[in-house]
Amino acid sequence: MSAPKPIPYLLDVAPYVGGESGIVGVDRVIKLAANEGAFGPSAKTIEAITKAAGEFHRYPDGDFTALRTALAEKHNLPIENLICGSGSDELISLLCRAYVQPGEEILISAHGFAMYPIYGKTVGASIVAAPEQNITTDVDALLERVTDKTKICFIAVPNNPTGTYIPASEIKRLRENLRDDILLVVDMAYAEYVNLDDYSPGAEFVSGSDNVVMLRTFSKMFGMGGMRLGWGYCPEGVIDVLNRLRSPFNVSYPSQAAGIAALQDDEFVQMSREHNDKWLNWTTETLRDMGITVPDSVCNFILARFSEECGRNVNAEAADEFLKSKGIIVRRMGGYGLPDALRITIGLEDEMHAVADALNEFMRD
Ligand SMILES: *Cc1c(COP(=O)(O)O)cnc(C)c1O
Image 1 (cartoon, rainbow, N blue to C red):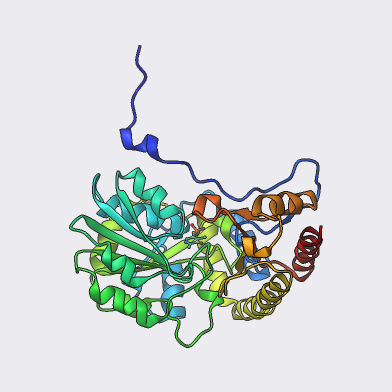
Image 2: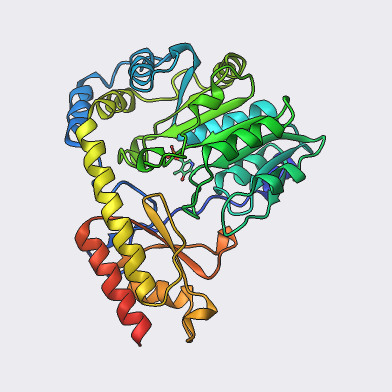
C-alpha cells in the first residue's frame, strides 16, 4: 500500500517554530518572545470585539469595506488598492502562490523574516539570500543577486529579527534598479514604532507603480496578534490576482471590528510609541553596560548578542536557560543564522527590569 504523496518540495519546508508561551513548573511567565505590543490590545479594541460577539452567526464582509474605508482614511490611500488578510502572513503566502512557480527565485536579505523562505518553499521557489552589512539589509548585495528567475524581493523595514532599517532613499534605489517584472514587497510590520525623518513606511513607492506592495499588520503595536489581521497596499493588478486567490471570508467578523476600533485609538498608539522609545533605549543601554552587544534597533525588540568580545564563557543558549529559570521567555535566533543572539521584546516597565536584573546576574556569575 502506498499513502497519498504530497507535492515533493513541500517536504523540504521546515514548519515555523513560534516563541514558546509557557515554562513547565512556572505559573507566571514573562513572555518577551514574539514582539507582541507591550500593552496588549487597547480597551477600545476589546470593547469593539465584545460588541461584535452577538453577531458571530453572520459571515463577515468578504470585501472588508468598512475596514478598508477606515484604513484608506487613516493613511490617505485609495480604498480600491487595499486588501486585508488573516495576518500579513497570509498576504505573504498569497503573493508567493500568485507570482512564483517551482524553480523560480525569491530574493531576501540574509537575516530576513522567517516566513519569506517558509512560504517561498511551499511553492517550490529557490530562496536567494543576500549578505548584510552590520546586520542591515544591503541594497547592492540584493541587486547583485538578481537573476532571470527572480520573481519577488521581500524586505522588512525595519527588519525582524535584526531591528535595523534602511532609509527611504535606499528602498527607492532598490526599486529603481530592480527589473519591472520583479515584485518588490516592503513589509512594514513595525512602522508604527518608527519616528525618524529618513524612514518611510513605503506607501509612496506603491503609488503609481505596478510592482511594489506594502504590507502592514495589527499584530505588533496594536496588540492583536491573536486576531490575525494584516493588510496590504497594492497596485491594481496585484489586488485583482490576490482577490482571485484568497478565501472569500479570510478575515473574521471580530477581527474586522477590532481593526476599525484600533485605527481610531490615536492615544493608544501615541502612548505605546512613547513607552517603546523609553524602554527600548533603557534596555539597549542597560544591556550594553553589562558587556552584551546590542545593535541599534528602531523596533519593539532588541537583539542581545553574546559574542566572544564579552570576554567570558557566556553564550546565548546559556543566557536563555538562565532567563527561563527566572520565568522569562525570549527568543533564540539560531534559526535566523544568529546563534549568538537572543531577541528580546520590549515589554512593560517591570518586565524590562526583570529581564535586566536576570541578565545582570547571569553576566556576573
Ligand atoms: C510579525 C511579523 C509579520 C507577521 O505578522 P502577522 O501577525 O502575520 O500580521 C510580518 N512581517 C514581519 C517582519 C513581522 O515581524
